[in-house]
Image (cartoon, rainbow, N blue to C red; front, side):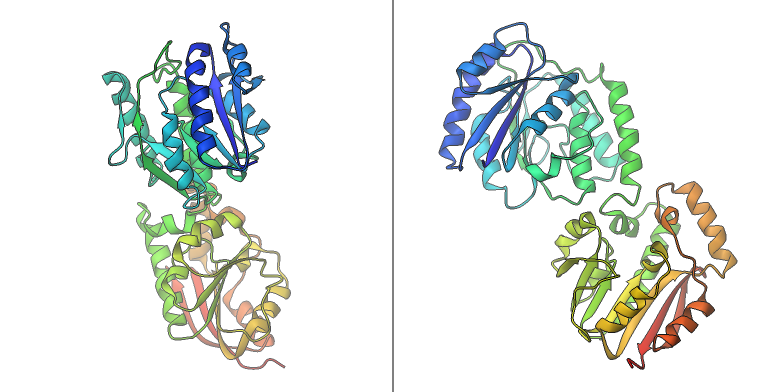
Length: 422
């Protein structure tokens, strides 16, 4: 089944009589390989269930409360490869499904957006102002390159939302879902859309009434956006509003790319969403986290989902191997270093970056990092390296130290040459 259409409804019988036949005509014309229409009934006291059943829709009675409960129920029961969500009140024109469907290869989430150029919204003045304030507060406050994160007219690739841990129960669920999609590295595309006034009945949205819910969701999403769980964590740090964090990322980037300059083919292990990947010409990025790789697709470089313990490359494949801010996040073991040596060509370069726990400056910085940026990378450090000990170990693996640089005297970035593969 190609598409599941999920429609939350509460006393929308009169609107469904008009909406469902139009939906069937529009979706049938798309030529999809089968679709289903799911009406999630939030406890209607009118003929919503009867109308939906008579017009070939499947009825689900939601168990969890609110608009969020309706969407979660619909997501669970949807069988399609894609899930389309829209309101039952005809404010979302079914004819707009066609351009959304045509854009499905460009992103995993397609949003009918009121606030991009050529988009518009016909709604009462006060409600429109509050809606704009809400959207700008979330997008600016959370540094999101989006405009309309409260639109409920969306087309999702089913895999983006099927197992998503959704907490919100009211209309703030729309913000949470989109931000979680973004945090997982899924592509989001906004298409300009003309929002229409409700045809019949009363609106169930009250921005003021749900104000506290929006504030709670903003706080939770702020914590997510500023944690390493967010796919663009490294990229965002490069433009951070916190000067030390921005300097640190940029100085690391400068040193690593300088060491890798004119090296030939490079392998960036644990590439994450770092701009190091974007700055090198012949490079393959490897990361164990799919969300990081999804984000890094925009750089247009080859990407591989793999572990440093088992690199899926032949022996002596690369002229340069980069491992920046990786080895401190894994248990101490010889295997990662043996793997890096294996895929590196004779006389190739190895660039190794990790905090130097032999320096007091790093230990102080890490303590501050824990306090000021909870959820940051400092919370994930498992193995502590000191320069002298690490260099001795690398010499045993057949590497010769060529250069050593520091970021703020704390993070060491070491350049080695593979001298002996015997």
